Length: 423
Image (cartoon, rainbow, N blue to C red):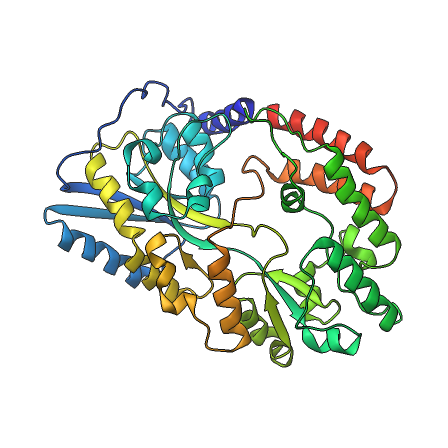
């Protein structure tokens, strides 16, 4: 991981004509106590212009609560955001409070450029969901480096009409991989092989849910080439050989399970809590036939957070601002404006706008997704970039197709992914 971070830093140094990340001198205790006053900067990611009024209201509220404060808001475009942040860090221009997903926070945390909020905030565990805090803890790096902001997860979606048509009970959808395979066999038989229940190949998240340790504890080596992982891949290999998955699930022609689901070519998909409302836009007739259920295993966690620059000249105000933006009331307000996201605070657990359903499928899905967040985890390591993901998927496809054994594919994937990690 250190080598990976060094590569990122080197790119930044080149772009910054000689400047490099310079946080190595910022060790030692950090004092965040003091009066909340003075100027502080907040950087968001692609919230203008759609959410300009919301952020301006948020800032006005903070400045009213803490007289004497003044917030400078910076909003960066969506494209190239990670490079922008690294350049800011290399030039000592990192804003006081920065919106960073975990994978963007990692290289800055490793260089000690971000505040360890687990060390400086004794109410962190009480106020935020544990899985969301853990998303900002990184292998080989002590501490947690972000206040969780808005969250999402996946639940299952089943086409009730197709399930009933091909001999399955939509009120009793699969609850395990083994059950999924068994019901997929029934659907194949009843539909003469024309319809599929299974709709994707195994992923990083599936390995984690199978109890496989993806990375070594120091974050230096991929360790997923285990017998348990091979057993999982064998299950998918047998299912593919039995015709339980679409042929193109292993090729570049694969559209993804949600798109195949919308086209009624498969009867199962995963998606966020607002998936049914999205389907209403593309295929209104399908939406009424969708039944949601809880994820088969530990739900995945998708998280955005706010990190505080350790080099901020106004740490008390920066911490207060990060907490203000991520408090329960302000997150609930944001979630109301952005359907499909959920607050990260423990105080939100009893918020009826998330914890209760209106009885519709969409309402049930929202409730299921919200409840799932209490146990959701970051299942895919943040060090997995596009190159590592490509190698992993290539070997998984070879194993599922039967072109190589599951263990051989996993061994080769772990070796090549580790090389990429340390290049």
